[in-house]
View 1 (cartoon, rainbow, N blue to C red):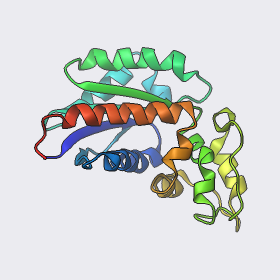
View 2: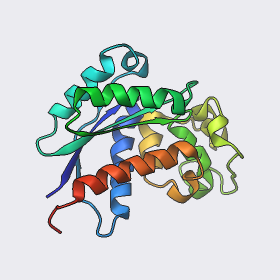
View 3: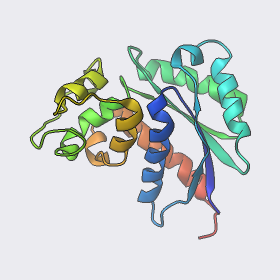
View 4: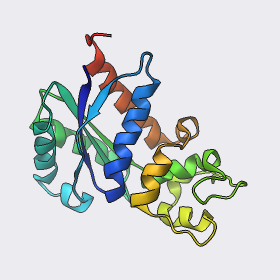
Length: 202
């Protein structure tokens, strides 16, 4: 029986990319975890940070679950420090449904920072040249989408709706785990999957 996860995201590209990311992590388990991900709820971060809005989104996401499951929230930190903003957002999210597993992850600075950290694994694919190297501190780059566009060949421009899901399927977890925020994301998704899969028939 599949376990269920309902997601809250902020970007159009996240709607497709985040379920891909979760399924990839679920596939690392032995045996792989069968997970049913509800269509993500997309709400801009500028709205979610307002009083009551994150709570409303988490409540709505929880109502999509038809079996015991979890709510996973993924946002870009932008100029905020994930370590400072994240705990406060988590407390707000947990206050809505303390009977459910809830996780809040902030990508520093953007989801695309994880692609930058692992860009060598995508060399020769999706418009990237064969010779490409990640910068020393991928999470310090402001404008990760613009950085990716600068690396693409043939006049290509990075498109969140097209490239984010495509790159989410192929970027190297091992390389991306060098960043603190992806490590946090991987741990939180794994925690949810482990907790929900306990007691499931194999």
